[in-house]
Length: 172
Image 1 (tube, rainbow, N blue to C red):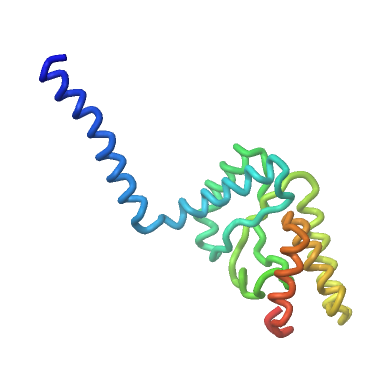
Image 2 (cartoon, rainbow, N blue to C red):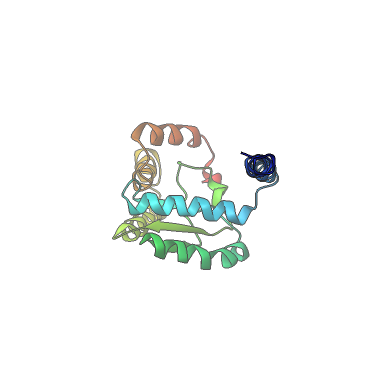
């Protein structure tokens, strides 16, 4: 091999490594929140499509953020053959802190009759609250059912309920 060919081969080996280093440096800079959220939604959509999760939730967003987000989210859902439902009043249970989605919108990612199950659970909770029966085992039961819809393992559901059930009724 002559000297000129050797130099060219050396450059061809070095340049990709330099580009890779620049890419890595850029990845360490601030993450674009929109792209991050779309990536998360894409991952959850795939999990719902293949049956790993029954129901998944997007990040909770302010209504104007969701307005700008939902078009791309719908394209992802179509590509993954799943459905989206824009929830403006996410069910509040002892699985999560009450204010996790307060004033925010969330996309429910699902297939089949899962939306009907979610809406029925939300209605059941509303009836329990209206009758003054949303306490004790009934309250834990609603949280458990929501956790099961989200395909959480039983042990994690119980842990989340225990961690969040100490919040005051006002917070729930």
